Length: 203
Image 1 (cartoon, rainbow, N blue to C red):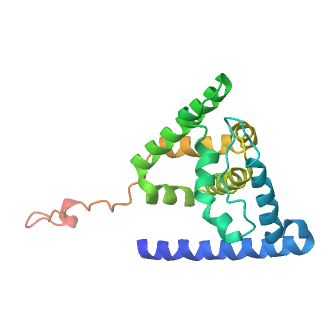
Image 2: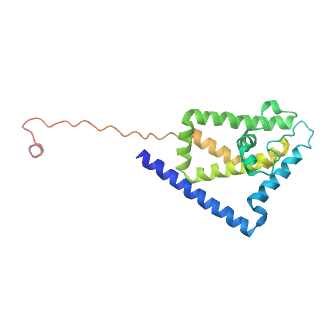
Image 3: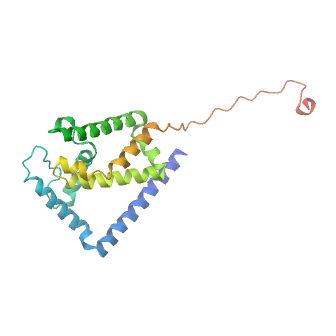
């Protein structure tokens, strides 16, 4: 049964990726500005602004390159930056301290969810709820886009504001929802009827 569910999950994922790819191609045909190559070039342009920053909160996540492969290689760091920075050692002023406390709370909550459920358990819980799937997909896509294009921790905190409620709700639901046991309940042992006593005689 678990093998069949895994196959179904992989099949659904492949169908979803195929649909997403078709939508990206169709969007690029209708709106050339949103074509993949143009988006990569625009992302590299935004990242180049980070090299001009001299403030204490200036950051540069992306490689400042027009290569799609180079941008994709930076997505894990961009995702972490958008979700969990500024960290406490990034603090430069009182306002950044507030943002750092919020990001640290989300980081600790993420560790707690992974400790309780594990990565596979989180994937199962999310895939079993359309609402959680939307929360997760929106958070990941938005965070990668913001993380790659942001060059300042102050602007990063403002740009990720639309994503934060979805990410927070996702973590809180995963942390508070009880784990569903998939174990098969044990059957009660069959007790044979006493000798000489049948169902008809008992009636």
